[in-house]
Image 1 (cartoon, rainbow, N blue to C red):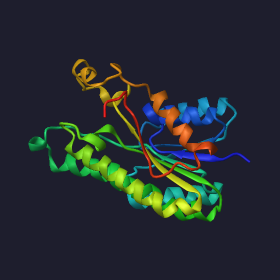
Image 2: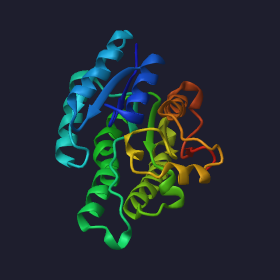
Image 3: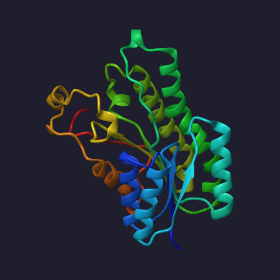
Length: 241
């Protein structure tokens, strides 16, 4: 029987690459988007063409009640997932003195509260499966070493790392691994405003990463071979930190 994986924020960028890679690896896929539904539907079409089961959920991960309602309804209809990838997130960069309260709140609410909003309704269903499971969260190099202009984002991503490690302790004896992937500079829409020439000087590999390279790391953590790896933060950043 095939196993399904929920990937939040999977209509584009890293999330899309993860969804396509896991579909290729034989998982059924539950896509998620907040907006841009047509992009999520296009990813679903590609996955269906691979012969995998796929569906799309649409909600804002920052809205607690809406998230719980959507996930509980999906599980009731289709059964619980084998794996969850918490990939959705936002950035609102600015120097800290110029950072508005709104920019602080939206980044913390979406990225850090999103961890609770998505995973809290899913943990007991995962446990009740009485089978191995996988949770992968997405942090960032910013959450490990900080980044100028990203005090809000660094705070949220560092919080995700701490939450991931604590949840890993709670679920380890249930055969459910909980790990964090921390990408560096990856070629997606999110680096549109980054001064690449300056950034590349800081990256030992002297290039930006590909979404597929992050996806390959997530795919390994989802595999049966990764059953003894939990509570870890795996950086995919070309040696940046």
